[in-house]
Image (cartoon, rainbow, N blue to C red; front, side):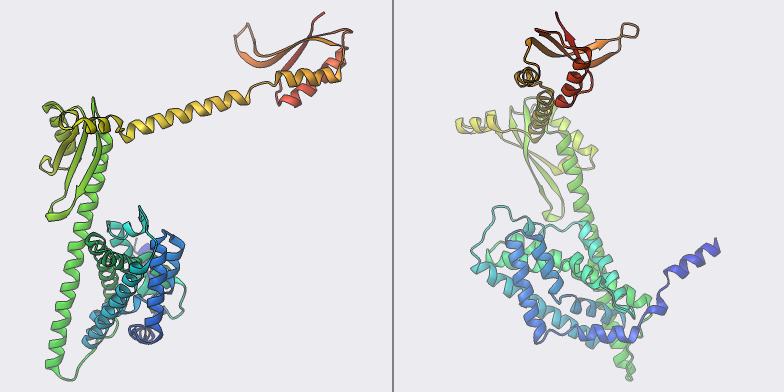
Length: 443
């Protein structure tokens, strides 16, 4: 066992491939936002905003590749890891500059942009953080600092920039400001904060793991003050990250359970769930169902409450709204309710139509072009006076196994020879793409 452990340790160890001094200098160099970096960031924000505005994933990826966003965030994590208060202030200052420039550029773009979408899916995707965003940011940050620490640099940083997606949330926040949409702004800033926090946390952990040298001061009083400040910042960085991860996991679990509950209870005899809303505000997640059709009986409501508890959601967090039922609607509402269809019913009908269409296509593919075949045989053998063709089956009376065949009955003024009949069978087999063809000559 110890030998196996040593082998694994030898394979996984990369300490001898790390350039600590070069890494520290490289990270410090990429922190500042001055001159070209400011313009590159502004241009990248515009490119990303265009991609979000037209729902173009390739454009968004291109913007993430050219944007210099990782520097201040990795610098923050490293500053905490090596107890460098000056570097921490510098990193946070430049991070703030980066955020302000990004918000200004994206807000300006969305104010003047003539484009608008009914369903901006790329924008919406940046307003709803999930547990996967936490994992991507944390492990992407680990990959980024490991790559930055290597003596020989590769292309990992580009992949990290795409995976952690720092640029799109800032652009979406700018969209929220331009359209006075607090939901978009708050959700996007929340996602950006998660990404930044976990990238910085991953950097801090890896810096400590690789034993980067700590910054020391000649004045012991200042040394203690700096360490105390860094310790406070570390706690302030770790505690929100843990809280955020717990909240995101809880919300994601609730979403999954709610959707499973909805799928299992779409139809309720003469009523059905035509819409639902999940709300995570106020510290507790709630599920609101909108019911259409006939009003629910108490027994049906109790069944829903019992069912939702099976999925780990308390009945106190389920609200049943029956404003679209027949008793609660006016005449126009009743007509609207009649035309409402549940997703499950629509899917069943669509599946049935696809199956019927498939069966119809199979039948059509087996149709025999009777007239065309008769004309072609008559052209080869002008003495044809009678012709009949049909699909049939040959049944073996010993075991009653059947095999498909095409049966042809024909009469000529002068009977054809056996060899001519065989040639005609071979031709008809190629013509129809069928193997079992029998031609019977009728006198």
